[in-house]
Image (tube, rainbow, N blue to C red):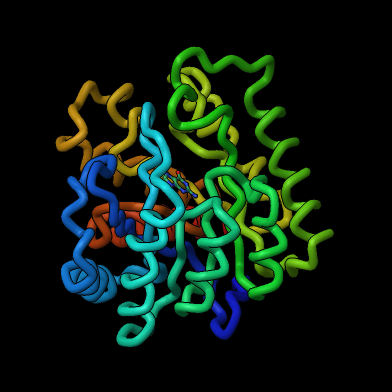
Length: 279
Ligand code: 9MG
C-alpha cells in the first residue's frame, strides 16, 4: 500500500509515524514553542532523524474549548514553517487545517497532505485540496472544539463514525481526489467520551475497510488520561502503548508528539500484526 501525496509517494508497507508540529501559542501539550519558523524547522529536523515519515504542521489549536485563530493569523503561523521544511527536508509535509484559503497557500508553499479535523466540510475545502492534487486525511469530529466535549452522545458510536467517514470518502472521490490519496481517522478526543473511545479503539479493524489507510491520534490525549489517571505531561507510556495496539489492529499512520518512542512502539505492533496474519 502507498499514499499518493502530490509529487511524493509515501510507502505504507508497514505503519508509519506522523510527528506533531504545533505552531500555535496555546497548543495542546507542547506549549507553542514552535511558533518561530527557525525553531520549528529544528524540531522538524529532530523528528526526521527520529524516524517520522510525515510532519503535521498545525496553526489552529483544536484542543477542547479552543477557538480558531483569524485566517490571517493561521496563514502567518503555518506558511513560513511549511516553506522552511519543504526547502530543506525530504519528508512528507501535512498541514492540519480546515480553511480553503490555508489549503491553497500551504500547497503553494510545498505541503503534500491536508489533515482536516472537520473532514473537508468547510465550503471550498474539498475543491481546494482536489485542485492542488493533495492527499487528504478526513477525520471525524462531533461538533466544534469549543464545545465538543460538553456532552457527546451517540446511539452506536462505531456505526455512526464509520458511516460518516464512508460518506466523506465518497465526497472526496466525487471531488476528484484519488482513492490512493485518502486517509480516514475516527478522531479520538473530538466529541467523544471515555466509553466512546473504548468502543472505537475496540473496533479499529472496521475502520480499515473504508478504502483508505487508517490514521489514529491518541498521543497525550484525554483517552490516555482516562485509562491511566495521568496528567498531560505524564502520558508518554500510555500513548506509546496505545500506538502499538493501534498498529497491531491495522492503523497505518500514528499521529504522535514523541516520535522516537512511537516509532519503536509501532514496530512492535506491526510485527505482532504480521505474525498474526501468517499464523
Ligand atoms: C490535528 N489533530 C489533533 N488530533 C488529531 C487526530 O487524532 N487525528 C488527526 N487526523 N488530526 C488530529
